[in-house]
Image 1 (tube, rainbow, N blue to C red):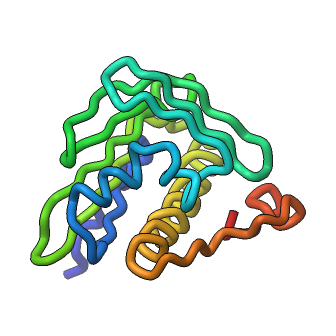
Image 2: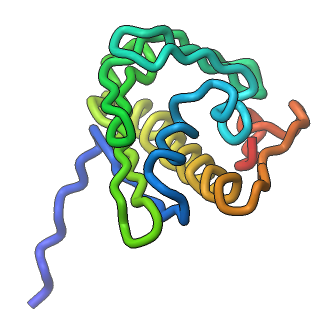
Length: 159
C-alpha cells in the first residue's frame, strides 16, 4: 500500500545550514550591516533593534526597505520580506562546536504566480545565500558574482 502523500504548504518553507562558528558570530553576520554586505547584499543598512531600519540592495538593483520586526541577541532575527505580508525568521542554535542556522520564510501568497516567483525563486536564492554565509564564515570566501550581467535576473545562482 502506497503511503499517503503530504500536501505541500506553499505559504512557507524552511532551510537549515550548519555553520562551524559560534551563534554570536553567525548572528552578527545577519545583523551587522558591514558583515551582511560581505556575503548577502551589495548595500546594507541595519539598525539592530525592534522597529529599526533594514535596507538591502542586491547586485541587480533590487531593493528592500523595511523595519526589523523582532531581534533577540544571538538567537533570532525576524523581518518582513516585501510588502505582501511575507516574513523571514532566522534562528541561531548552538549545535556542538557550531551553529544550526534555520531560515523560515512564511506568510507567502499561494496563487500560481507566487508559487513560482516566491516559493521557487526565494528557496533557490536563500539556498545560495545560506551556502555563501557558510563559505564566508568558515573560509572567508564570498561565492557571489560581482558582474551585473551574471545576476539572478539572468538565472545565475551566484548573485
